[in-house]
Image (tube, rainbow, N blue to C red):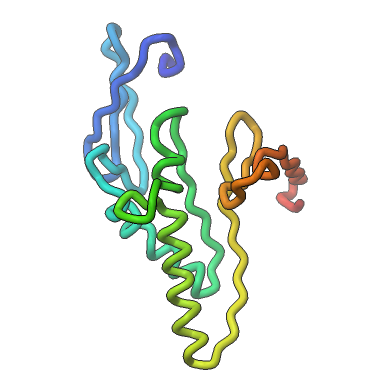
Length: 151
């Protein structure tokens, strides 16, 4: 398809849901559509505002998966984890804060609330637990899924 050759493609955002890859000296174009395309100028808060409804859906009992995909160095981990406690916080710490605030509201009304969450990174067919900071986070996790989709 030409995208994987040695020449680095140039990404051109076309709209809020589409982008084009321009391929070097051969003037090849590859068009892609997504639910949302964020330009490099968008901050962490704007990204989280876009996905915070998914967090609320999870709190409402729905299964939710937020999938960040891209080449190495494109900013996926930065977007998900961020840095510090201020404006550069990523999706994970902002989601945890949203969940914690919701839990406090329910507990004030006498509810008991139990939740489970996982944040994983898949890189070179290895899975890393993004919520663990110790060496155990680097352990390889084997996931086996049968052809019928069951574990």
